[in-house]
Each structure stands twice: as C-alpha cells, then as structure tokens.
Image (cartoon, rainbow, N blue to C red):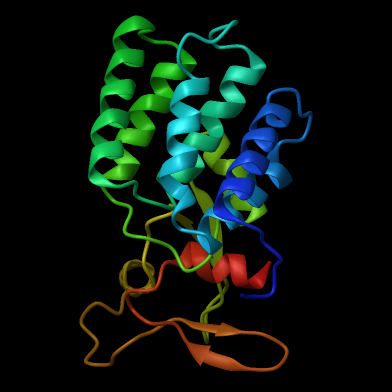
Length: 213
C-alpha cells in the first residue's frame, strides 16, 4: 500500500532487471536510476536483489569500462550511499570490490569500487532517495554544493556528501562566521512556501535537498 502501485516482489524484481538492461544503453540514465532507487526504498526486500544483480552485471562485462559497464557502477555507487545490504550480501559485495580493484587497477571501475567501499562504511539508511542533482554528482564521485542563507550574512556555500548531517553543516558555518565562542545554540531551518521548520541535527542534508526537489 502507498502512493505508488506495485505488484508482487517477484514481478517487481523482474521489472527492475529490465530497467537495468535498459540502463546499459540509456543516454540519460539519471531518471531511470532514481526510479530503481525509489522502488528499493518502497520495497526493502528488493535491496539485496538489486545489489546481487549489479554485482552480476559488473562481473566479466563485455566491454570493461565501457559506457554500459560504467552506468552499472554508477548505480551501484548510488545504492551504496542509500542502502546497506544484508551481511551476507555485504560480504560478497566487498569481495567483488576487492576483485575489481585487483583486476583493473587505476581504472574507472577501480575508482568506483574504492568510493563504494568508503560509502558503505558511512551509510546508515535514508529517508529519501538521492535527488537528481545528488545522482549526477555521485556519478562523478563528487560532493554537492549546498547553499545556506544566514541572518545578517551573505549566503554560504557548503560542500556536502550523501552522509553529511545538519549538525556538521551548522558547526562548519558557526566556525566560518567566527561564532565558535558564542554561548548561543545554532540550527539549520528548511523553508518552503508553506512552512518553516528546524532540521534535526542528525538529519542528512541530502534528504532535505531531495524533499526540496
């Protein structure tokens, strides 16, 4: 039950596999990637399924490092910043990352494997799937630029990752504004047309940006 219409897990797994096949030749893979991530968020039992499918697709690819192969690695990167697989699948995934780095050192696949390994050590689960902007920067293994408007000061640009919390951004801004010795408490607020509310200190800024999107 929910705003989206799903069938059985088996049928959805087949649909996701078809999406992965389409991803290989997709000129603009970002919306398709976000759709796969959304399905996994709505149907958690499929997270392990997609991890296993992506490991299979990135093992012995017809053209290692080709566009289709890299699209799979890019989706695997987005998965690693959004969901943690179950322990057995996580062990197998780490083996796959090690194997890729050993077989293709200094390649794009090896760079993605290294990025994914580091991300898996930080991922704790997301409220929202990555925004289109976040997926684009993850595909390049880069950080997003978040703009924060401060009272009495110009807007500040802060580089954030998929794992950066509101507390970390607030602390950085307090330091930049020379308020480290202030006895006051500081917090981030998100403001839309209808409401303004504080952002919880442990909230991931990437989730807030997805809500804006």
